[in-house]
Every structure is written in C-alpha cells, then in structure tokens.
Image (cartoon, rainbow, N blue to C red; front, side, top):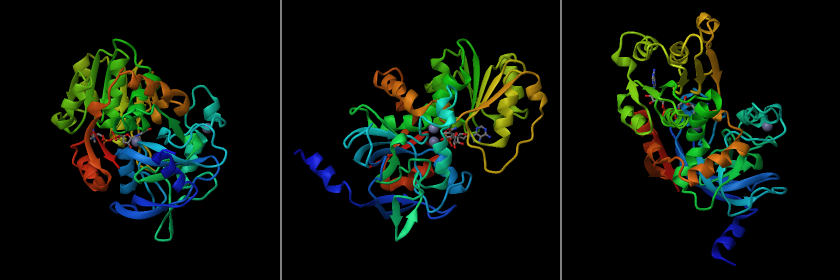
Length: 382
Ligand code: CND
Ligand code: ZN
Ligand code: ZN
C-alpha cells in the first residue's frame, strides 16, 4: 500500500488535532490554536487544506461587518485534498483534489431548481455556523468552534458537506486555483453571467481588490472596449491595468461626484457599473454612474449589516437596471467545472491576482497587507 494511502487510512474515522486560526470574538485578532476536527458524518467530507486566499469577506467577520457566530474559523477560498469521507458520499473520494464551495448547490431548493437562481438555501442555513445536522465539527479548549459559509478554510483540516465540494484536476496549482473558490468566480461571473457585458461596451468597476480585478477580467473577456477602474487607492491602478482596465480614476482627486466625472469622461455612455467595495455611498454612486436609460449596475460588495440605503427612485424610473449577485451568479457545481477547465487550458490566468504567498502561520501579516491596501490576494499555504 502506498505511504500516502496508509496515511489517509490512519486518520479516517478519528479526531484530527491540528492548527487553525480561530476568531474568538468580533474585533479580536486571529489566534492560532490547536483544534480538534471530528470525522465527517454522513454526506460530509474532511479536507486537508493546501492553500487558502484572504478575502475581504473574512475581514468583514472580524470587523463585525458580516455577521457570524463566534468563536469561528473563517476562510472560504481554498484548495484541498479529501482526507476521508462520511457515509453515503459518492461524488468524491479520499485523495481527490477539491475546491470547497462557499455557495453549495443542493440541487433541490427553489434557487437550485430555477434556471436563473444560484443562492442555494443551504447557504442561508450556514449562517448559523453549523452543518446540516445542527452541530459543528470543530472543538477548541473544550468549546465548540463554528463554521463559516460552508467552508472554514483557515485551518489545516476542515469538514464540509458533499454539496459544498467540487473535484478539480489533480495537477491544478493549489495556490492559484483556490481563487476560483471566491474572488475570480465572483468577479468574472458578475460581468459575464449577471451583467452579461456586451462587446464594445463601456464598463466602470468600483473597488479594485481581488473581486474588482476579476470583474475587469470578465469585462475584457466579454469584449468591452472601455473598462474604467475606480478606487481611492491609486496604488491599485497598475494592477487593474495589467488585467485589462483601459483607464483608472481616483474619486479623491475630484471634487465632483464620480458619476459626474465618469459622464464627462465617456460622453455619458457607461453601460455597466459594478460595486465591489461594500459601502452604501459606492453602491449609490455606481447606480448613478450607469446610463440613465439602458445602464445596468451590479452590487457585489458585501453591504454593512442592518443598514438601509436612501436613494432617489428617479434613478430607476428612467430605466436603469439594478442587480446584485453572490458568487457571480454561477450555480457552483454546474458552472465551476467550465471555469476550472478554462483555467487549466490557459484561457485566463490568475497570476496577476495573487500578489503575496505566505505560510499559514503568517495569517496576521496577510491581513495587514489587506488593511494597508498593498495586496490584491494573499494566499496562505500549508
Ligand atoms: P478588497 O478590500 O481587496 O478591495 C476593495 C477595494 O475597494 C480596495 O482596493 C479599496 O481601496 C477600495 N475602496 C474602498 N473604499 C472605496 C471607495 N469609497 N471608492 C472606491 N474604492 C474604494 O476586497 P475584495 O476585492 O476581497 O472584496 C470586495 C467586496 O466584495 C467586499 O465587500 C467583499 O466582502 C465582497 C465579496 C462579495 C462576494 C459575493 O459573492 N457577492 C464574494 N466575495 C467578496
Ligand atoms: Zn439548493
Ligand atoms: Zn470571498
């Protein structure tokens, strides 16, 4: 029996003790802890994480902008290897390389059944921080530690449901393909699938992080001729241009609202706008920035909790379309295999999105880079 096979069998069915980055409470730093990861129950799989990206949504949990149950293990953009599987699991087996899916596809709920739906009911259930049976597989210092959006990847091992895992090619590079688990799919899908950007169109993208740059890649692939990046951090412009932005604007360098600036720059012809920041003001500015009659504006940034927006309904009355999407609008299990195979066939590359690769124990450094606005994506490796 090969060593690798024997190693897997030696842990199957047993509790695994490993390192994980635990958030004990809101606004507290990550604490690298020894945690216990229980074996997968029926229709669940246990995954050894190989690489995981740092997304702003993880930071939103830490800052309290995204509600989660504490203590929690966040992280949702990863590549891993199946270590063991629970009873009834048929689609993956130990040794398979996988991407955990923050957006599951149960195949049975109203969103999964409808051709245009993608927000599976299992995603909403995951807000409670537990798996389908109502319990968690993580324990630390004798206390349960909660799951985060069906993934929890800032740990050496995690447990997810079979509906929340996608098998990928064995030779896919873990520290790149993990971005298909969030940033790339979210942004690229917002442009291609949700907005349905058209050839020759003009697009504006608010927020040039990993998600915003992936939107730019989608706009470019769809044949947009002008792609305008908008960010208050001008250091993001070079990266945005490297993936396809034709020009960039810093709202801090203008006294007028950015919607006015964009109108002047384009002769009032921005067809598609995207909000990839997660702030009220930019959501409204992005809406106002698209053409009053035929413009389409897509909300992708994660809005602050329990906040209501005030906007002039005339913005919509004139004909604009206002949309939002999670995970780009893709049905995760149906649509991601094509993104994976296109990546493997080198139809797009993810190199420019990954600005930093750090060992897992430097997770705090990774978040510092995000806070300082220096990184696009930092990928942690194990
Ligand atoms: P990241 O923080 O890397 O990028 C956000 C960018 O916005 C940064 O470059 C900021 O400088 C910029 N910014 C901040 N304020 C402004 C402003 N007023 N005007 C213009 N630009 C500004 O974040 P990310 O790319 O990882 O994620 C972006 C958002 O998308 C964030 O809110 C995240 O939670 C959300 C998201 C949504 C989904 C989904 O499925 N809809 C999936 N993942 C992430
Ligand atoms: Zn479903
Ligand atoms: Zn994310």
